[in-house]
Length: 310
Picture 1 (cartoon, helix red, strand yellow):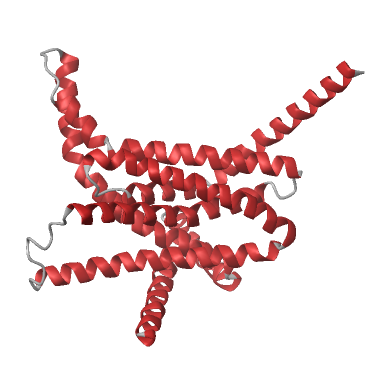
Picture 2: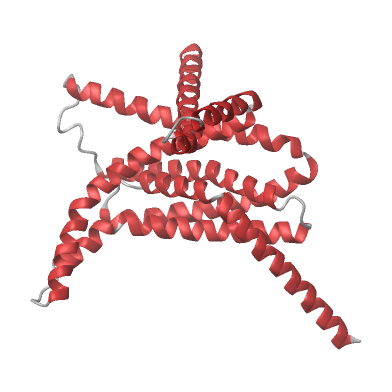
């Protein structure tokens, strides 16, 4: 009897693991777009710190991301069990926050360039002290963890939607598996991206006259030269991703807006030759535009409220 019970238990465990594997694959496909945005955003967020502090900063953000998921996974299960109607409003608030942060970055960049052109900032004022560098690093970490919280919430919500009809055990294991895989994958890639220039410098300084060594030096020089452009590009992509993801969350929560976007995409698809391609990118473009408008309105409201309080 004991042997039969053990075999039955092992069969149940194998069945659960099989369900978890299937559900995890489906959830990973559906969250792939958010994963790309998460990667671009976090690589952009942790850029700009000292070279010897890049990996510690990435590690600190990764640990913060794990803490986020330790909060989000139980919260998602509780919300799904007791107040499932609250998932959409919470996601929309997160989407609006992403749009607000994206537009705040644009506003800050614009005011900084304007002040620089007017000569307000001197060269010495632009050189931060050691204490300022530490505060800047902490600010970067907090900002990245805050952004990760919103994107992680969307990943967890999408995964929860995939496993909504599964058993509670399958839901728990699938959510935990997706949370771990996404965190390790994203921050492993982020660490690789921010250390590209160091890898290029190492390759470019190798000694020798062999073909592979010469190719390595050439490739290393290319990495060193390309790294600043890559990080600048990630900054742009990360800001666009904020509007795209945040706007997408908002439009999906507003049914009337979502229907209009689908109608426009369907109309565009009827155009000759370029119709299918335009129809594919139109929803993303419209979500981004909606995100920019929502971010501008959110920043205007927050600024007005701050002025009113002062």
